[in-house]
Amino acid sequence: MSGTQLAVVGGTVVNDDWHGAATVLIADGRVTRLAAPGDPVPTGAQVVDATGRLVMPGGVDPHTHIDMALGDFTTRDGYREATTAAVWGGTTTVVDFAIPMPGQRPLDAVKARREAAAEGVCDAALHGCVVEWDDSVPDQLREMAALGVRTVKLFTTYRDVVMADPGTVVEVMRTLRELGGLAYVHAEANHLVEVDQRRAEEAGHIHASGHATTRSELAEVTAVNEVLASARSVGAPVYFVHQTTPGAIDAVRRARSGGVAAYTETCPHYLTLDDGQYAEPSPELYVCCPPLRARETVEGVAARALAREIDTVGSDHCCYDRSQKQLELSDVRLMPNGMPGVETRLAVVFTELVEQRGLPLERFVALTAANPARLNGIFPQKGVIAPGSDADVILVDPGERRTVSAGSLHMATDYSPYEGRELAGWASTVIVGGRVLVDEGRFSGEPQGGRALRSSPLPQDRLIC
Ligand code: URP
Ligand code: ZN
Ligand code: ZN
Image (spheres, rainbow, N blue to C red):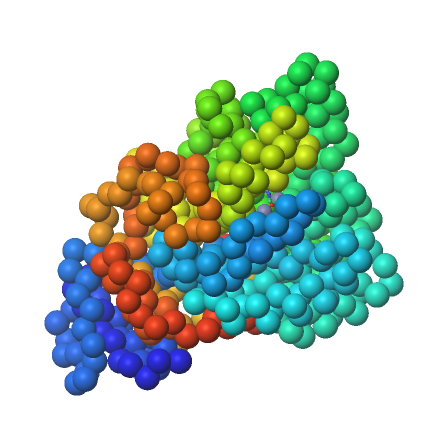
């Protein structure tokens, strides 16, 4: 922790339940106090001028794939590169997935990744991942929880790679319930995806340009409903990653009214990009799972974000580059899926939802920082500016707009899905653990190593956001 004292003065502080003028006082890496504007600043404190700026908790990205080896491809970044890009974009905590390599135990994947966190320039939390149930899994989950890893990824698709069968899904949920844990589920019904893909192949649409037809909305909604039934059956909470369709989001809302503690995440790309990208040059750059949807569907997802029916926005950051995306572009079943986005997440959400659609600032903080922290058991350490919280604070000039170009971003890739777009919501100053790391366009600070965060037990029977 830094011994420096900071005073962030003159800005508008925004938490998920309040905004107003205040001075943020920081010492030893933590927020010590929110003082009234004009109150004296402690002697010796470094003053950070936030006049005209929003002062918000650093972003918490609940869905990043760092140094991910999945199938035949490995993403281009490690913790150092990914967290540096995150911080440039105003995200000061990432949550990564410990996906086991073939033959590796889930617990060993978690242990290896916890050590890698020290290479980062900000803190990281982890999701475990279970692919196949066996008698050793309950003890492994207990040991993960003892290490502070209580969220566990389950894929209902990607057969022969990481797909978990319905029995595994339900047993993991049942065990997590005892541990104060939470299943993070990628929900697409694989058998229906395979029907979609076969149909696309027969129609000659299995190329990247036909990606939208290869994983249907029906496949997503079907899996969400099945997993919700499992959650209801064992009385466990459940979090759905990267939801893309009104039907899936509405199913979660209905389940909540029926007493299931279920949560919806979406991603920046499902709030703004549509399947028209697949008809443009370089469709492979936009191949992700689930695919980008029709404009009407994107509008339906954005409307639900405005209506408080979405709980978090995660980047689903997958740092492949153009050369990797181009290798198998004639067959989406063989291509690396996913897009880079840890650096652009806050700007895309701010532009799309706050600037263009009037989302209240408190809700922006809820979606991008506070709720992801809650749903990873790291609130109020992260996700809020309050006495005792880690001093991860960003300053945003709401009037400043930048045009995206991959060359001026910091992710370890050579493209951005948002190339050429003008976005607002960029962090001009980023304070991590009480150190000013980014200041007015310069990476100025000396970062300390990132910490592997420990998740507290999560409530099982009530909603926490
Ligand atoms: O296309 C995606 N999302 N790739 C990364 C793995 C996953 O499914 O999250
Ligand atoms: Zn996924
Ligand atoms: Zn993902």
